[in-house]
Length: 431
Image 1 (tube, rainbow, N blue to C red):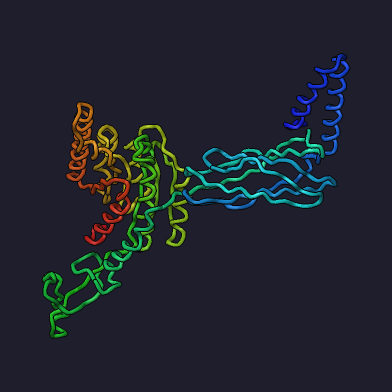
Image 2: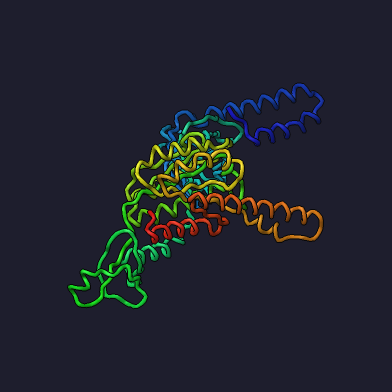
């Protein structure tokens, strides 16, 4: 049983005659009796909540920043109309107002209540129970009950870097010799012969072809296909650090999606591993057509773990998964302690077998602080920022001396910078 605000109002109005009449007790009993009768009548005539049949339908996925619609269908098989309120409660990050809806389901009919969600966080958004309150004809009281309607809305990464994909694909076609602007110079796979033009590398001259044709011809090369790309996401505590309004992990996810889409179009095989002390997400053996879908689905619920990443176990896991020579793109932080104590001692095992790119999201706020000055607080902040910049430069130099390609860029240019590093390695025939 559930009482409404109308019942409280009637009880309040009953106070007036009780206060005016001399027989206070009799008047009070009369008011209470009338109110009890009204409540009993409403409860008796309200549609039973347990007999209502509820079901969910609608969207199961959406991108962060977009909206999704989930429908609750209410079927009333009973002889009485079901009029009242329905509360479809979601977690706050699902942003699903209004939480309470007016329900009016005549006998033997169905009503559909649509909830529009605008999620504010990536990951799985789950609803709570659906609470239904049916009221009697007087609107004083009614019946209330809950229904379990499981559902899951997976909020995927927004993939804002997809706007950079067409320009990178154009550059990829240039590398591949599919447009007129063929790249000159030796790659890794022989493509065709063509006439020599001034500026060509003389080492590319094909002397046998020159002897047969009577004209000087050179060999053209194209980047190799079917290379193995392993994208590794460090989901340890450093990935939880916020740069601007989002954690570093979100910028890494966006860059990983752009790199995966680009590499799959290039004909390379792409796998994914998210790791801190154990694997958190994996994508293996995906074809070109379903790679992006599988990556998005695996990365959507991924959250930083507030633990220190085990660098040695990460390297061992990479070596176990990548048996043949591969390009390993590791998204992690350029922090001194995690790198020097975790990754660097095991780095030689990785670089001796694979090409390694270490990609780290830089904080533009550090650059702003380093350029500041004025009062003592700003001077101290600038000194601290300059020290942090110097430490990143030292780590970058140390890694490059050990054969690691380093990408260090702010969030706005991070994803295209990683894609450019991949294209540069491919153009140089290093994959």
